[in-house]
Amino acid sequence: MIAKRRWPWVAQQSWQDILFIHTPVTYEKLRKLVPRPFEPDTYDGKGWISLVLFEAADSRLRYMPKFLSYPSFNQMNVRSYVKFGDEPGVYFFSINTNRLLVTLGGDLASLPFSKANIVSYQEKDMIYFSANRLAGRKANSFKVAYRPRLQQFTPESNSLSYFLTERYCIWTIRGQTILKAPIIHSHWNLQKADIKIIENKNTPFHFSENPLAHYARFKHTHIHPFETFGKVSK
Image (cartoon, rainbow, N blue to C red):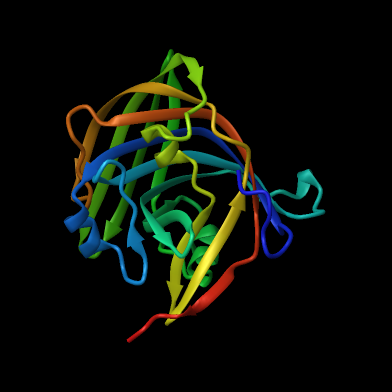
């Protein structure tokens, strides 16, 4: 966990029923997708794209009482792994949520938010998550069913699981300005998950038949102000 940031945290949020779905991609393909000056981050020579599904709760500013938290909402992120300077982080291709106000706030922060119809529910020991949005003139839809395994583990620092989950900032670009959105939370305790992708229609991401999947029941996080890191070279 990163212990220090340039400024104190300003907001907090809890994530619930977090599912990571990971698929490998070649460095060359990832290089075409990730804007410079960010460098695609690889593990054993492979790049990765991940889908992260969760419910966000208790979203509020620092010192704000919990009963004034913003209502819970669902979110689906499509991200990859990048480096800039000496800090690894994530780069978001899209962030989908079912709250319009969250979408508008994300747009103001120069993050790629889109409004989507998202539903999550549980039947017996299976959790279902579906997201549908209109991208251009095509309807995108994604639905997955999954079952977390019982055994928890803490990823070792040199493992692929650690590489894919232990990330503590978002790298993005606003206009020509390079920005870092720092976050802090405790290290991940994960469970493997058995998943079945039920629908994946008109989406820009594809997964192997048996994608790597991780699950975490809960994570509380602190959000720090954006930090600037110069301009993009023309």
